Image (cartoon, rainbow, N blue to C red):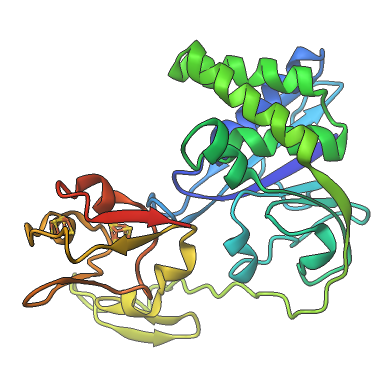
Length: 294
Ligand code: SF4
Ligand code: SF4
């Protein structure tokens, strides 16, 4: 059995990628399962998805703790998550990155493949949806499934949900990524991230319904604790603001889900420590005063 773990961010389509990979394996007569794991549902927050592929029925239902392959849809996750946790000996990491495998450091020596899925997605799909391109890289780097099966899997999962034209564009993105994927090795030197967890037992819970801010080994929790969660590290794109075009309508301030746009007397200000790059402000701006740039 081959087990694949996808690391992505809410909104990047890791779940559809896992499903399309399962569908590709099924096209080749194999058995496959795919499912996601979310924390709090939030655009930009780290999410996991899993695919298992075998030539016989699959009864294992747990999350994938010891993957053969790890797929990282967003390079910034390498700085915050130990993506290689549990990676099997001889396993491979496939990363959406413009860099070469030997230029990346995931903390351990590992086989690695890289592809600039973001650029491919922008060129082919005209939007930064990297999930289909990364599937082409998986086909190239792992040989788990053929690229033709990936294209069929994409048509089944993306095409059925979003229409055949979208399915075809995504299949093309996978094909382009297949051609451009670089396979190599990386040598890890940096210290691996250790996950900080805080879950209260009954004695740790505040009395009554009102929660209070508390210092824990995972940092500050409770009201106001968001200040320690610098969501600015999540972004691939950031807003570029043109003061000359801005009419001070406040739409961006109103819609920003992170509350990181501030109204100043003659301009808006963006706090890059917390801007997660969702692009909602640029979408909502009626004056075209915000552009998302990589
Ligand atoms: S400033 Fe714009 S891109 Fe950044 S989080 Fe707010 S809405 Fe999203
Ligand atoms: S939405 Fe656009 S025009 Fe309105 S305040 Fe924001 S940047 Fe200015």
